[in-house]
Image 1 (cartoon, protein in one colour):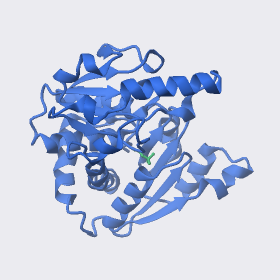
Image 2 (image 1 turned 90 degrees about the horizontal axis):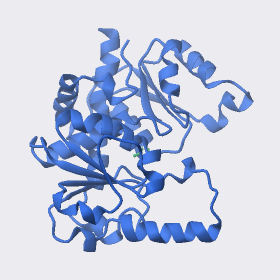
Image 3 (image 1 turned 90 degrees about the vertical axis):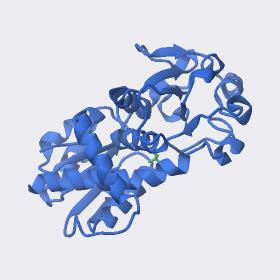
Length: 299
Ligand code: CP
């Protein structure tokens, strides 16, 4: 049984095959490839894009979707996540998609199921389908000519599962990540790391802006200090038209965007911003992922 927990669960060849399927699914038309299959989604953390994208992808393939509302599930009565998943598995779904704040939880659930587990984000650990749709969007933009492109990953790298999964995936396809972050959001890494995006902007082909992940921060600073930190952060890390100039840089963000903190209103409207293209591509990628992981099970 194959599960998708991190991008490293897929070989480069498998990813190329997924991308071929995703290109076919790009028209987002419905088909019946997964007719009669049932997909369960289990989101213990908030989501707009990933949850609805998986649901739409499953429905476009003809599968039925059961969204377990965790706020009204028996986890409220003390049931563990492991028991919840084992009980759902006993109802014989064809895949379980899970998001949870605990790093490593989806991996630990593998032994409780006999259907694929698809990780929709675990803490700061991994978000494999986000990294796949990011790579797909980059590949599409450059018509496959991505070898040697420089991508700045900007912001709260230390707390971002999107950064973790992209740093795992993008170098496998020849991209060069450059990490841009204030000291408190940096990670120990072999990739070039800078504090000021202006030091590298002329070398960049792509910017991936990240949201500050407040939900994973321990707040120790006073409200005044936090306000000052925020002001300083915006000045240095918000992607604005002034910073971009007329450079030919592809601008990405996984969402949700905190407007005028991560990216300015003006840059979100700029044709170089492909934030909504990422969302559109996310459905095609998730259709390809569901097809691969669900049909492998019945082969
Ligand atoms: N990119 C992403 O994971 O967005 P959601 O949190 O809305 O799913």
